[in-house]
Every structure is written in structure tokens, then in C-alpha cells.
Length: 261
Image (cartoon, rainbow, N blue to C red):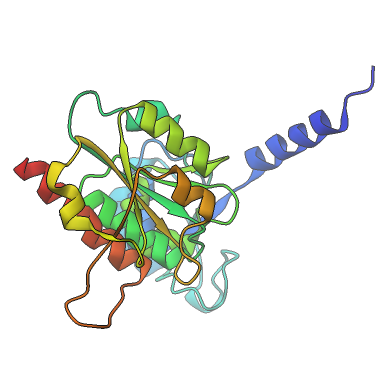
């Protein structure tokens, strides 16, 4: 019996995902990936100088590095990549399922959701903030979001190895799943009538912050799925934050409100 086209396509996508690898680069990103037991590591390319600086991490990883001439660096990276003499080929991380990672279990909990945030530098910075402020996960859709890349990992400065970055099939469905776990979801919108700090006066134990790309912001479906739309008030008549700064400010406000409540 011939397989339906949709089954064949799904099998192809699964094989492609299994075959996908990522090149991480930069001393911080490579060191943290070498020390992460969750990482499936495939190939390590380093200069002699980088090998010396990463000696402990290389030794604990049981990898055999390829020593490369810095003038003809052997890893297949973009020539503009600031690799610092270190590159590591890995499989993308598998953090598991959203309910397992994000379940509040009766404690204070924070998550970040990103709607069409495609810039890897913004997502990397958001992962750093999420780690600092104790978020359970950063969640984004598979399509129209920043995938796990070397540029993202370098900006995250190690946070990618420790901070769950969950890519989901459907953002609205993931939001509904979080609601079922007890989360209250605040959509960040510069035109919203409510101020974030005022909205957090009765802070729920489980809070989700939903941020959109700069310019287009949140999609209508995403807005409709939020429990409330809120804004960050500027001190003056004008002023705005890019998405990574807005995430950091919002996470700080939530953490402080949850601590004080």
C-alpha cells in the first residue's frame, strides 16, 4: 500500500531534523557546550592557542580536537564569524516537552514567549536574561523564529546550554497549554491601556511574558490568546526598548513582584 503524501513528507522532515547539526563558535560558547552533558558533540576544531585555553573542558569532554591553522581555520564558518579559534559541531539540544519543563509545581514560575522574533542576537540576549531572572523556558514557534545557531549561542554567552529554549509547532496552542498549567499570560504591547507594574500588583505565581518582533509586534491571534495586554511606560513622552531589553525589564519586574507578593 502506497503511503499518503503527508506521511512521506513528515518522515522526510523527521530525517532532516535528525541529520541537522549546528556549528558553535567562540571560547565561551564552545567551553559551555563541551561541559554540557546534554550535548551530542560531533567535531571540535581549535587553534593551538584556543586548545590551551580550553584544555580542562576538552579533557572532561573526552573529545579529540582537530588543531587548525588560524589563517586557514578548518571549520565551515561564515568568514565574518568571530570564532576566537574554537568551533564545535553539535546536534541541537532536546529539552523535552513543554509541560515537563514549565510545570510550576506550586512554586513561583516565569516563562518568556517570543512571537516572530527572528534575530539570533536578540534571542541570545533574551536567553541570558531568562537565565539571570530564573525563567523556566524561552518558547518560540518553529517557523519565523531564530533557530539554534552559532551566532545565537555566542550572544547567549553560555546560556543556551543551561536555559531551555523550546521551539513549538504552534505558539497559540503552547500558550493555551501554559494556561492549563496555571500561567497568566501578559502580552507586551506599547499601545496597551494597562501598565506592566500595575498589572503585576496581584501577581500570579505562574507568569508568562509574551513579546513580539520589533515593528510588527504581536500577531492578532497571539494578542487574543493573552490574558492581558500591558505596556512598559517610558519616563518621558517618547522612548522604546528593543525586544531583548524589554524582556529583561519585564522579567525583572515579574521576579520582584513575585518576591514581594
